[in-house]
Image (cartoon, rainbow, N blue to C red):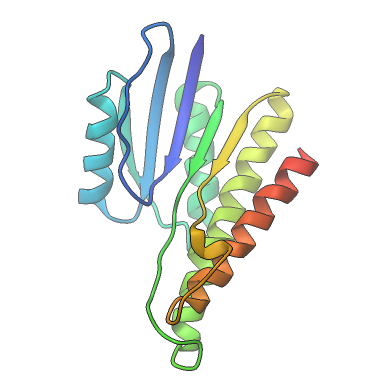
Length: 165
């Protein structure tokens, strides 16, 4: 079985690759050192991985990432999306700039990437998207309101994608 995996990172990835799966991973993110570390961790499991510098808060980066992955791999099977940023601050102290940054990356960036990958899935008649949110999508604490709002919206985005695709 051949599997291609694209990861928009937010943390680290570890695990093992069953020997009967031919998998390739492409890691996307704005921080080269972190992204290259994640790609090395994945490669260490026996799954070839490469890092691609991109920022999901920028409109074209998600589309370019999916397009280049499709050209490199010939097909895409799985999108794993755990991209996110957070900022501690009450809603009263959250600036418009911080609010926009969190919405642009956590929600709009996720939407853009999923929309592009969804088109690939629909054309191929197969595929999977995995989206990571946060416990903050269901319950929050002081200083996490803006982040929690984006994570709750992410959960509903993935529920809608599941219904529509």
